[in-house]
Length: 230
Image 1 (cartoon, rainbow, N blue to C red):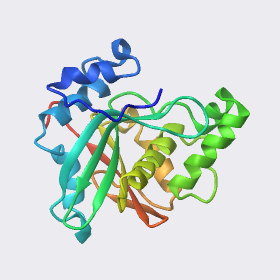
Image 2 (tube, rainbow, N blue to C red):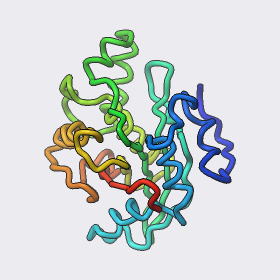
Image 3 (cartoon, rainbow, N blue to C red):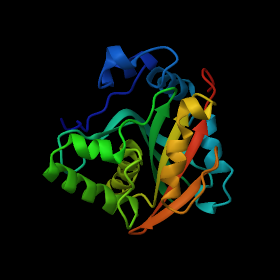
Image 4 (cartoon, one colour):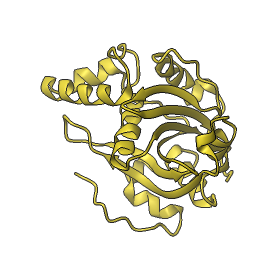
C-alpha cells in the first residue's frame, strides 16, 4: 500500500503505535518501536545524540542544522515486490546552505532481519532482480552485496537516497539509532560489515561518508541513545 502524502502531527508517543506494521507485536517496553517514539517525541527537535553526529563533524555544510519535519514509520516505495521500505523515522533537515534527508532505523535487541541470500530465497525471481537493481542504483555500490549482508541495511540506505532525490536534498544519511550498548545484542557487527562494503570503518557516534551518488553525498552513522534519554 502506498503512503498518503497527508500527514497528521503526533501528540504523544502512543500515536506511533498504530503506524507500525504489526502494532501488538512490535509495541513493547524496552524494544525499538517504543524507545524510538519516546526519543523523538521527547526531543526539542533532533534527539541530542543524533544532533551531535552532525555538530561534531568538521563539514561546514552542517552548520546551524535544524529539523524541519520528522515522520514516523515512513514508507519509501521500491521497485519490485509489494512492500515498501518502512523507516522508523524519516527526517528532513536544513542547514545554512543545504537540505538533508535522513532515514532512521531504531534498534534495541532486534536483529536486522534476513541476509541478502535469505531474502533472495523468499522472493520471486523477477521481483528480486528488479528490486535489487533499484537498490543498487541508489546506494552507490558497484558490486552486489555478499550473501551475508543484511537486506534491511541495503534498502534503508537506498530509501535515504531516494527521498533525497524526491526532496532535492544534497545529502542523504542512514542512521541506526541503537538503544542497547552491547554489540552482541544490538548486532553492530552486521552494520560494520555493511559499511565495510564502501571501504569504510564505522565509528560509533560519528558520521561516515560512504559515496557520491549522482551528486548526492551519502553518509551513515551508528548512534547510541540511552533508553529514556532525550
